[in-house]
Amino acid sequence: MGHPARNEQGTTSSLKRHSQSCEALKRYLRNHSSNSHSTLKTFFGAESIKGKGKLNITADIVRDEVLKFFISSNVPFLQVDNPHFQRLIEWISSANHFAPSISISRKTIRTDLSRQAQLAKDDLKSTLAMCDSKISLALDCWTSRNCFAFLGMFL
Image (cartoon, rainbow, N blue to C red; front, side, top):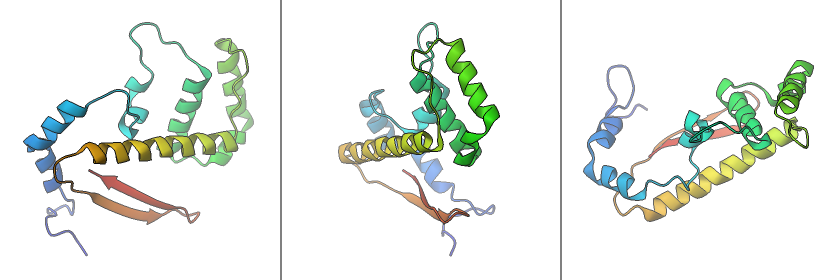
């Protein structure tokens, strides 16, 4: 069943228009914008690794960027075992003189994903707890080919 406010392309743009003009939302974002919260937007944004000066690449930054690549490109975690990928990670590790070499496997990628999901969940809880106005949620659920359930939402 389609949303009653969808446009001729079948998308619901009224929520987006509302969020752009809602003074209560703008006031909330001004008052509660903080870099201490980890959000998906900052996780996938380029600002997540940029500093004020020279970029210092750490093993954690490399692991986060690898996770972003796998998620955003929908690459199966099995590809971590590809010998060319492993060689690339070894080159990055040796070029940046990491004391312990970067160890990336399917298990570490999955652990990193679980950690980021928990951070996003905690951030959403704290954002919703601080909100003193009405909240509108747009939800979409789907199942991947390998039977993993996903839930996407937009505040």
